[in-house]
Amino acid sequence: MMFGGGMMLGIGLLMMLIFLGLPILLVVAVVVGLMGLWSRRTGPVAMPSMPMAAAPTAPPARYCAHCGQGLQADWTHCPKCGAPVEARQS
Image (tube, rainbow, N blue to C red; front, side, top):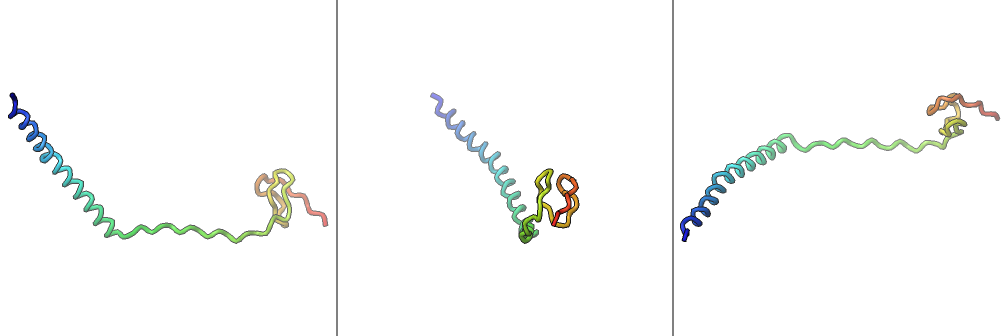
């Protein structure tokens, strides 16, 4: 009968938890506490504001014959493909 050996194993595990677990728990608590103090000192982080969307523009006066890009009335070249825009006949 090894009644004493089983009890020693239980005490050994308990001591291991105390000597290893407690210092690890203390280190984690100190780090979390320091992070809390640091975040309180620096204040909340401001979120960048989203730019407002531009007002809707008027529909294109005409379209490029090469790529279909919408064009303004006074443009002479397509901004997408660079093709010259044909003069509009009135």
